Image 1: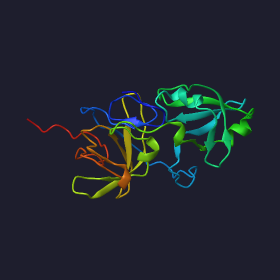
Image 2 (image 1 turned 60 degrees about the vertical axis):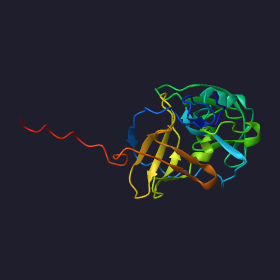
Image 3 (image 1 turned 45 degrees about the horizontal axis):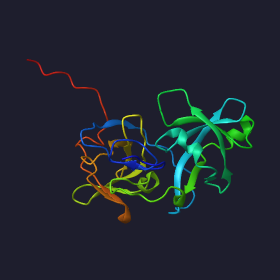
Image 4 (image 1 turned 180 degrees about the vertical axis):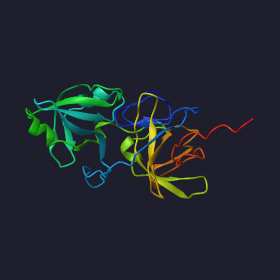
Length: 226
């Protein structure tokens, strides 16, 4: 099954809608809790979040861009996007950014020709009307934008956290979860094994996490003497 931009699925291949992977993935390292994102407009179910600008790149108007599409460069193929501030954003070109994150690009934006203009785009989220992406056809497939903000509950129905992001570092989609008790976020593979229930209409997912999901990584204890 292939996916379109903005989604994830449990099939194990990144696209525009996230999908849960097959069982067997391992948990990923925890990350520091991100700063609050002030770039998002009020929730609008008719819009799908496609990406977000980062810092300026160089002096000639280029800007870093985090893409949420399956093929990261495909974000430039959907025509004009809508900025979180309502402005029309047209990407004229994109190329991979240096580094190991496949979803990070360097973009050029129509009308932006210098560093000041690029810096003004920092942290601006980009959206596309949902109707331009079509409907989800598979029960294991969901738009990334529909996952962010969902409650994360355990098998007993207790809320343990909230999904803050759906990153992918090349090995499959992950759910970044902010614990309800506070502290650093944790990453959980978006697989049927770890995420047995998707309940988007009720704004929640049910997880079956490892016992140490929210346990900070620490030094390995010394071996016991023989």
